[in-house]
Length: 77
Picture: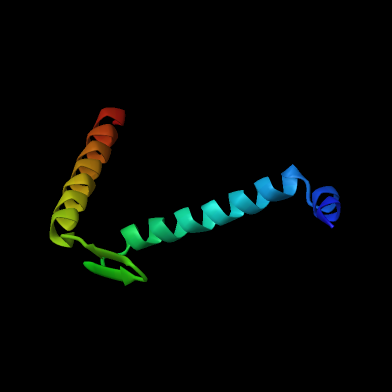
């Protein structure tokens, strides 16, 4: 019986399933961090974040990006 599983599902199958599983987990974590929720509870995982600081940092990054674009446009004139 174990030979059936070994011959039918080889290493490539298990690597593919593992890749899909870890990819789905990382995508879920990415979108949890991208959301602006300050409290997250799932099974035994409890996360509480300070999103106000993240908003301030993102606003500063956007302002820097806008200033850089303006400077680049002025240099091209």
